[in-house]
Image (cartoon, rainbow, N blue to C red; front, top):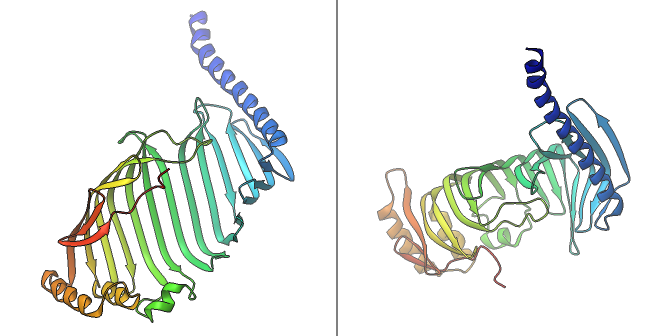
Length: 316
């Protein structure tokens, strides 16, 4: 009886011990990576340890491609399941040769969870922003939440979600100079939920997704009198050419034509003709429902041809 009990206790303990050793080895590897990497620099590292996880606080972390964090926490569990968590708070700086963008505010937090064994697959990524400003881009954000998480409902699948409230765009954008007040510079709300199927798993060392399928469950946007809602499914040939159909429902569609005229995209008489057609198609609430069809590198909105379909990538 005692031998049987020792066996039942010993196997889980051995598993936990093996995992703990693996976490220590991973931590040592991270330290070596920071010390020897030419692409990453940091001013200091501090270690915190609890029975459940190691946490490494890295100050003034900067990468060679212009991403800077005042502080980044790298959390490593000492027990299963495997996973490496990276989290940071504002300010976050993104710089390139043309400009430097700094995100800061009441709450700016980002998390990235990675299954470090065996391939370093990204399991979940989140970004939460409240009452923030994006200097360098002159954007103010009341609230923004973004999330991507692994899903088994598609090949290399990820569920995607975005919620936004009161995104204030810079007044000096060329767009607002052209449209003469047809739209304000504040997008009141946006929501997006979709399931993306990728060509290959999203790995932390190669986070360049190639989307094969996109199943949009729901998407909405409110910008002044424009209310947009859509859903649908798309496939992407070679990760570039979109094929499929998006079901659009638009209220305040007249503003689209006003903006198109002011931006000299269409002639006033053409816009007036389309408004007459739109009035015949609209329901009792003034909403038009039309399919946006992408096929053979051509895009159509209901019966109206819109031109070539946009590419989802840059062809080599």
